[in-house]
Every structure is written in structure tokens, then in C-alpha cells.
Image (cartoon, rainbow over all chains, first blue to last red; front, side):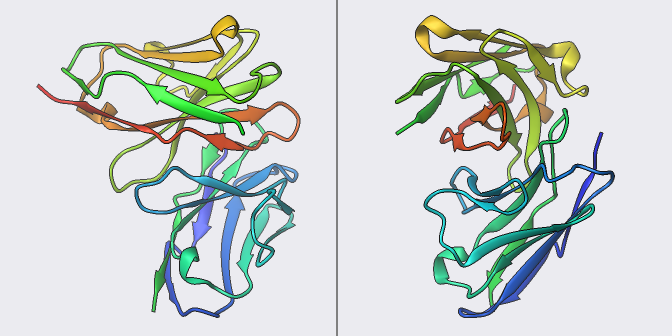
Length: 107
Length: 118
């Protein structure tokens, strides 16, 4: 199975900060990398697919990038509603696998 | 607007069979996978498996021996059956739609809490 390793596991940030979350795949997954946001008590929500394509309706402060097996989710200016847990997921092959999650907390 | 809704029992005893359905509304299920994902309280997401509208399946190897997924295209619904449940199967179970080409999980159900307890 492909292992997805996210870092950091948690971070504290302030409103307006630029935040980056990393995700590394254990082998090549091309650009089949998706990012999800999960607020407490809610289902995950798709933010970015294909490593860098913004899902319809998602604010443009979210962006994704890729370099080999390393992927990055960037929030350019953190908003109060962005405090949540973020997961990466590879959709290159089955079984699909998720990163362990990155919790973004208020500083 | 596409919506997915999970349904099924919320409480099971050890060794019983978990049966969940995912009903899709607001769009056709043709040419989509339905994936099932679960999340134990306070933990991360685990991909359980997926079923295509043709009925073909892919399962997580850790659950494969206990798992069956199916589809009823006439009713726009997908089903999951997990036999011989234990406390380790206690989790929120989600269904989500996956397009065949772009492969993201673009629409999710709200989730259903399944508790296994004697």
C-alpha cells in the first residue's frame, strides 16, 4: 500500500497567517493527490484534486502544488473558518490511502 | 445538487453483521464509484473500499475477508455489508462519490455513527 505522510501533525496559527501543510507519498503517485478539510462533527470536504485543481466553490486562498512525491497545501491568509483538520489522499491506486491529518489550531 | 445519505443501524453487538446503504439523490450514479470511508472517534480516515456502478469492487485488504459491497442502479443506492463486527469496527462511516477520471471524493454523505458493544 502507498503510505501518505503529512507534516506537521498539528500547528498553531493566527488569522491572516500563511500556512503550509506537507504530504509525502511513499512512491510515485503522479498528480493523483487530493486535499480535504474536516471541521469537528462534519464530513470531510474536498478542497483540491489533481494536486493543484481547486474544487468549485473553494476560496482562492487555498492552493496546492506538487514536486515529485512531495505535495503542499497552502492557505495564503488563514481565516477563522479555516481552523480544522486537513487530510491528503492518494487516488493513484487502490487501496486509496490518507495521510494522518494536520490539525490547524488558533494561536 | 448531488447528495449522499447513509442509513443503517447505529448499534450492533459483537459478531453481528453491519449493513449500511448510501442513497444518492440529485444526480445519476452512472460512471461513478461509491467509496466507503470510516473514522474512529478522534482518529483519522480509513478507506474501506469502493464499488462501481457495474458492480466491480476494490476492498481494503485488512477488511476484505469480512466485506461485501454492492449497487442497485434502479434505486440509486450502494450497500456495504461487514460481517463479524467487533469493537474495533466502531466508527463514523461515510460514503463518498468518486468520478472515474479525476478520482477525487467530490461529494460525501454526512456520516453515520456505528457502535459495536455488548
